[in-house]
Length: 454
Image: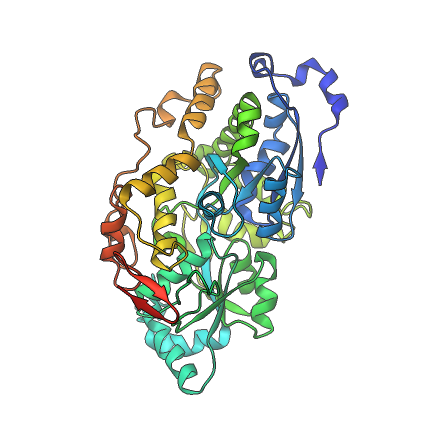
């Protein structure tokens, strides 16, 4: 845990003009995070003094798991947090804990991977095409895993894999990858929230830092998680990452900074100040072709942040990614914090998460396209983001050209070539998108008992 001492406020040299501009409703704040590389904007905003520039005295506290973190924001013990993008959406629509959570800031793009144990990798390899040097050709499809799962099923063994939370990007990415390869990851229903109805592969929750140990123990055969916990498996010699989410869906949205709607309503200026500090941190992380990344790695390796070895964090944070031991490849956009409007909270990003909730039965009944739009707009708040960005531009701390001022909140459709199953995504037509996916609920379909009806 780190805290800026209140005594620092006496030094006027530490206070920027922004402090005078915004009349802060609350200046002592506690933010939660999980020990993952993509909490970096919070750590950087603290270490680089961006929070302090806004007159904010911030404590950063690591949380045990995603549920504890969410409960902390809802209960007010935390003023905000590094969150799974699905958490504010799920809470707002009442899946799991019900509360109105919003986000004025998206924390990053990409940053996750899917790893399997060494034993499973050896069974997959014969099904994977190789290049002239004998290296596996990427991206690797889950079609290579399908015969392995079939063998386990024939032997009467469940095939278990881990993800970090039911509404996590990792759950939906792992499901997407499996389904794109013809494997069913299972449905949820109103009565059965295991997510394992009709599943070929049984997915269960494991907190991110515990993933490698759980894999090593043999409890799971693979997992989807954020960094550095895929690279940790490589360094420990216990597993092989088979695909990054950048290969699964190029520049996909990842974490968000979440606060309660009640907090924002009571503290609008404080919310703006926090958003300004986070935008500056994201800029710093990506500026000059990632020139600051090694410094960021050193920050994140500290025990109060991620606490993994700097070498492990650097393996994915500095433009490369290691698959099999020694098979290190260039993936310059594996972690994106500011490029490609990464920090802008797009409605279309929110809607993708909602489509996946509907696809797998977490949203039990069909919803019109207008519902997806309304929910997205109640949770994602680009108007707050752009107000903060405008202030930074006016202060000479950001460039006018770096922000999508004229956006309607929707990205251009993601082309088929950027997604592993070759199916394009358009956030403005969620039901048509759901209908285009071979595996998953469509139209009026519902899960009743163990069957899909409708």
